[in-house]
Image (spheres, helix red, strand yellow):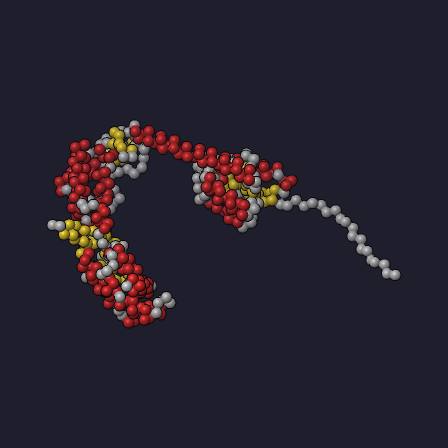
Length: 448
């Protein structure tokens, strides 16, 4: 008889092992004030957090060696160097618990807090505030944190409102509350003081505009006379109009659309100010309505450039004796003076005809057709040829906006100079145009 062999296993009592919990302390202070002290606010926050981690030593908590301190950074956004390093280490699996002194040290924005908590949960990281007993691993903890953070954000927005109200109240008393100091003034003891030489220039600009009634002519005169602004650059039409609209010059402080008498001395008297603004209003009424300008076709809008200045040319028009004259004008001429650009303007109809003629010649080149066919899998050689044949009969039937779209599919840039025009095609433009014309032709056949 065989007896079964029974192996006895002696049970060993193994000591329980407490898992290690890596803790990272994050500190933040909104301003840099006091950070140069031997023991500053960041140190105080860290000391409290380290003491809390030590109290949890029995749970396996220990402090990681890296420091995550943001001194002089607002809690209104997440663009902070130490916080970015902390998030990178969390994603790398180097941190298990984030410890802060108060929740608003991490962020004051409810939306940003939601983003951080999402990342924490994705990597199994717990968030702890040593002065507020919260645990983000539970739904109740997350609810409580959201409520607290909502009040923190409310406090931040309320503080911003108080600052805006204080600035508005100070302006209503006529106080200058900082910002760009316009030509004609300087700041002394937080107040605007007139600079006599610059003030004389401002008065002459107002007076001269009233005499000639044209900002364009005035800018040209200033350029020829070598008059420059505080930046050392010639005075542009934009700067000129901003000067004419600046109520500081008439001794007022602007508050939105309203204004109140300021504490500073005026450079321009009320009579001259009113006469200049009446002239500006008259010029505005003489111009065509903006809606009409937007409806005027501009085939080369956004792609035509002045080769002399290297700047874009903008579409514009004028009406004389009931007829519409379209043209493209160089931005240098607009912002400085016509004398600053040798090209100035070109007639829109003429330049558009020249560009379209060049385009037609280029797309009928056999070499270009073959190159397009080889580089574009979406269209065959015969389709390219047939599609491009449709350009002339289809073109005149298209609306101006559709013509503009097809032109800009094909052309990357048009350089205009006094001695000629250069047209730069897009690398994949011909294939795109061929497909567009093919689809247009197919649609017409279906409609027929």
